[in-house]
Image (cartoon, rainbow, N blue to C red; front, side, top):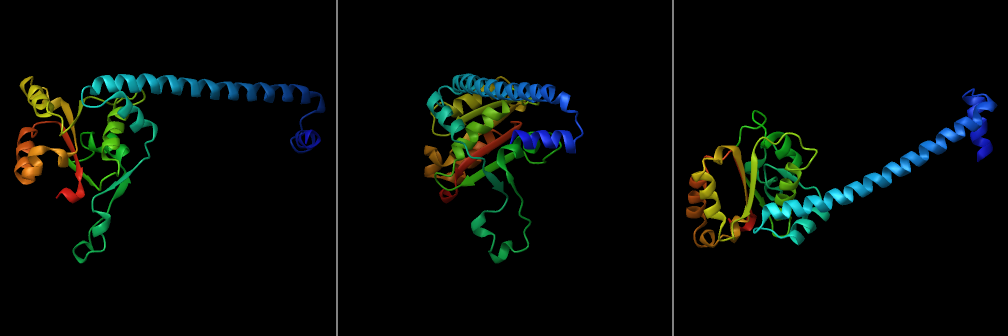
Length: 225
């Protein structure tokens, strides 16, 4: 192997044989730098992830625990979103519909939450049970506040519908006059007690309450409707 490398360097690349020790030393040093850099990056990533999970779980208290945040970020698999449910793509009424599909978190970070990139302010994310709706919401929150995401002019507020303090917290933001600079993430509409009784009435109440927020993202089970 060493002879083959020597032949390539001298015969094919025209490097003088006297330079070979220098070339060898250079690539040896480069290899050590790459290995050291990789080890450093892994260490930094481990420390940053641990710090980020603790900070995010503190910010999301009492709605989500540290273990929930850690599990959601550690095992997250990037999901896609599209404007037409996959189960309805072949229906006659949807034959000529334009279907768009893309990764859901980059969509919100690059378009949904950027003024002028997307005209919509209200989003309803529908998916079956166990498809990762809550995991998506937590990861969206984490990615938005990540160190490398420089563009975050608005505050994000993530809460589950089932928590008894959710509506009170929304009203508190409104009373402070901060709703126009706040993006609201409301998880699991189908777990709201009032929605279980009458989802249309409850949805109307919620939409009336949050109408002045910068953006509103709501998740729910598809079967709930």
